[in-house]
Structure formats: structure tokens, C-alpha cells
Amino acid sequence: MQDFAHSMLWFWICYVLVTCVGILHTVFNIYVLKMKPMDAHGMGEGYEKTKPWHPLYNILLFSLFGLLYMRGLPAPSLEEALLTGAVWAGICIVFDLFGWVLVRHPWSLTFKEFYLDYQPWITLIYLAIFLGPVVGFYLCTL
Image (tube, rainbow, N blue to C red; front, top):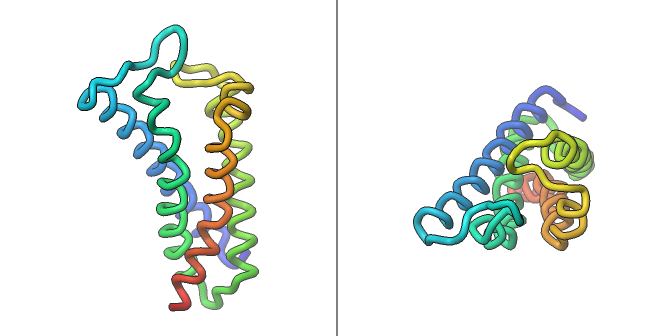
């Protein structure tokens, strides 16, 4: 990786931003659209209705931040974009396991809820994160 520190800077900014967008979408659904909130039985309609949008947030934002990373490199390449995408997706997979499954909090999910019930969305999200730097690279070459 040509510039690991900047890659991580762009990655973590994007990760936090994507998470905030998802939370704000859920809050919007609950308070503006009057959908049911989280309860003892699950995450609630307000969250459930956001799921199909999650891959879209991720491909748009990770592509933008992939572009920002690629533009900052002295020699952007497809190989660099693929490596960056693999690193970003790998970090997400591990971090999500801890942040959304293993560490218990009001919005945490079980392993089944996160990796099985959240299909196909979680797979599409990880694919979008992997492809973000690749899309960013191609945008950089326009």
C-alpha cells in the first residue's frame, strides 16, 4: 500500500460517516415518517426499512473516499485500488464483528441477525466497500 496512514484516515472518516448516515436515516424514519422504533422484539420498522439503502450509502461514500485516497497518491493504479479495497473490507469485517455483534449495546445484534438475517445487505455492503477504491481509481483516471 502506497500510503497506509492516509488510507486509514479516509477509511475511518468514511466508516463513521456511513454509520451516521444509517443512524440518521433510522431516526428520520421513526420521527418523521412515524415508523415503529426498536423494541424488545427487534430493531424496529424504522431500522428495517433502511436496510436496502445501506449498500447504496456504502458504494457512494466509499467510492468518494476511495477517489480522495487515489488522488492523493503519486502513482494511483488498479492494483493499489484492489489492495486498498481488500484492506478496507477486511477491516470492516473484523471491526463490525466487534462493534455490532460481540460488544453488547442497545443496537448490537446476534451473530445470526448480523450475518444471516441481514442478507443480502451485509454481503452487498462489504462488496461495495471493497469496490469503493476501485471506483475511485476509475473516477480518478477520467
